[in-house]
Length: 294
Image (tube, rainbow, N blue to C red; front, top):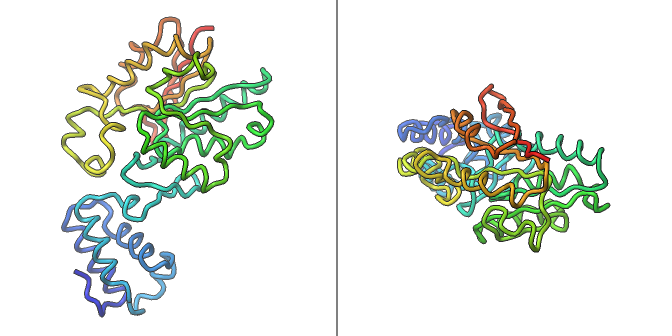
């Protein structure tokens, strides 16, 4: 427990020790982020005033205990800083990861290329979760959305996740630029919704055994967004088998994967499709770009 009479410096020291004992990998950083959250002060101010008294000792203790139990900092704070955006986060959806930024960058390049060659294009973000990918694209392409040159759809099988996505879109003022749809993969495409030219997806790719182990944030994030079956690729396999029926001819798929899944993906890619790998910032193969035959 953090003593109610603690100074900021003492509270940070005690919290760091508690989180280290609990096996958290970044105890000092977590302690600083949580203290900044409960006090409403930024980390720079806190570190510059270690002697200042702490009035929020009970709230800080509660936050530290939640983190010690393994709950992600993003869920405790209620947001994640991602791609210079503040994304609202809670147990309704996955926490946005740094590698997912690469999906956005690759998709933005593809959309720009298509808009240079054709009057309009349709982009669809599958398993949108918190809506982070769709939000980033909507902010990048405000003008094209307003001019009806780009149609942006985001879907999820979870209505709770879509509600969170709607909150994030509204918070950033782009709720009118994205159509939110409850759907299992691309089931609605070609029927009441158009066939997409560009598909982004962070589908479940963690093996069931890993999810069961509940390591780190996996014990708190929604299982439906994580569990990809025995090899992690059950949902991906189903998507790739069906995508030629629902996507536009020549569509581009930009998919996030787990480490060491690229070789299997080459076997799952639709007949006639070409695939390239986009390494992440650590040089790992985490994103693939699949181009369907025209």
